[in-house]
Image 1 (cartoon, rainbow, N blue to C red):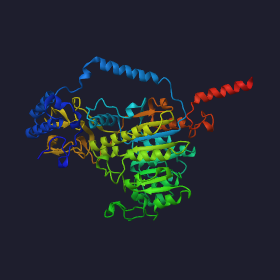
Image 2 (image 1 turned 180 degrees about the vertical axis):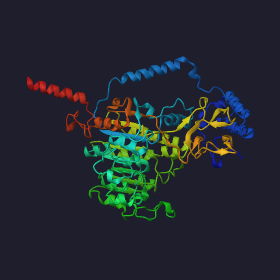
Image 3 (image 1 turned 135 degrees about the vertical axis):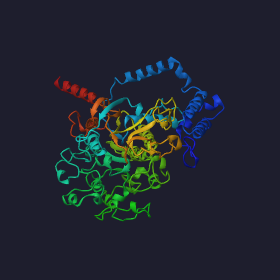
Image 4 (image 1 turned 90 degrees about the vertical axis):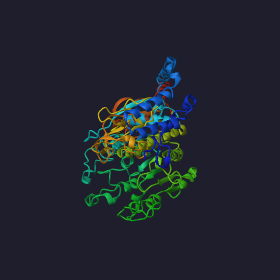
Length: 573
C-alpha cells in the first residue's frame, strides 16, 4: 500500500506543510489535513501519472490563493522595505564595546541552501507557509561569506575548516589544531607545528570556556578547540596506529582533559572513548559496539574529576534527568556525555534521557556567565552534516531548526551590547531544492511537474550525489510509490555514493554584538577567530586594548581613547 503523502510509519503526520494552511477550512470546508490526504489518495490511485499531478494542482487552486491577501497590496512590500531601511540606518552607530562574552554557533554542513530550506521548515512548523519566516540568525545585522577551502583541498572537510575558524590559520584536510606543515596521518610532522585556538586565548585571559556539541566531544569541530592531531579520527588510542603512539602523539580524548586544564563546560557524545576497552556502557549494557575503546586502561571521566580543584564542584552526568536536576549555582565544572558516540537526531531523541541542543546551551550559559570576566562558548549543531551525508534531508533540516532555537535562547540569556555572537558553517553540502514549487509547498514535497524526460514526479529536495540514487527496472525510482516525507527518506541523487559529499561553495557568517561589523564582505575562513579575539581583547593581538581594566567591561574603545587624550591634555596644562 502507498501511504498518503506526508504520512510516516503508524500513520504519523510527518509533513509540516499540513500545518501551514490554517485558513483552508474557512475557504473550502476541508481542513488542510483533509486536503493533503485527498491529494495523497489521488496520487496513489493515479500511480504518479501526469493526470495525478494535474488533479493535485487543481485542488491547490480550488483551496484558494497560494499567498496571503495582504501581499497583493504594494503598500505591504513598500512598508516592509522602508522599515528594513530604517533598521539598516541605525547600524551607522557601531557597537565598538569590548566583548565580555563570545558565543560561536557552528552549523556543521549548514550551507546557504540548508539555511533557506530550514527557514521554510521553521515557518511550516509554526503553521505558516514558510518562505516569509525569519530564522534567529536571519535577524543578525551583519552577514558575510566565508571561503571554506583547505590548504590542500578545494572542497574541504570539517577538521581543516575547524582549525581555520577556531585557530586562525588554514590547514590540511583531516588535521586539527595544527598548521599546514602537518600532513595527515604523519604523527612525526606534528611537533612544533601546533596552533592554539580562541578557546585557549579566552581561557588564558581569565574567561570561562565551554564546548557543546551534538556529535562526539572529540569529533572534528570541537577537537580543533583544544587538540593537536595529524588525524581527526584518532578519537582514542584504539584508533591510532602503533607508530603514532610510539612517536609520542596522543589521542584526542586524552588531549581534551590535558591540553587546556579546567574547561568549565563540556557536553556532547563520545562516552565510549573515555573508558577502558570492553567496559560495558552505562546505558546500552547489551550492545557490544558501545563498549569502551581505550587500550591504556584509563577511565578519563575519573581522571577529569580528580584533576579539579578540591574546593570546586565538578559534576559528570550521562543523562538528561541528572543534567536538569543540577543546581547550577553550585556547579563549577560540568562534563556531560549523553551517548557512546554521537547524540541522537533531534527527531529521534528520547526527551526523557537525552537533552536537546537548546537545553545544553541554556545550562552552559548559566554556568559560564557566573564569571565576571565573561566567557567563550562553542556550540556545534553537528548532526546537520550527518543528515546530509546520509541523504536524509529531513533529519538535517530539523537539526538546523533546533540549532536556531538554541541561537534564540542564547540571545535571550545574554545582552547584545557585551556579547559577540557569530553563527557560521564549516562547509556546505551538495543539497538543493527547486522545481518551481508553488508558495507554501511542503519543503519535503513534490515539484509541481513531472520530468519531461522519464515522465516521473520528483521531490523538490535533491542531492548532487549520495545514497539516494536508485534504479528500479533500469530507470529512476518513482517517488510517488514511496513515503518521501518519512524522517529517514533518502532524497534522490544524481550520482550513486554510499555517503553524500560536502559542497565547495562559500558559506554564510551571521554576526551581532561588539565589533560584529568587522564581519562583512567575503573573507577567508581563518579571519573569523581574529575578529572574535579582537572584539574580546584576547589572543596575540591586543595592542588596541587600553588596559586590563577595560577587558570585559563593555566600555567602547574609542571612548577610552578620548578619555586618555583628555587626561594627557590636563597634565600638559
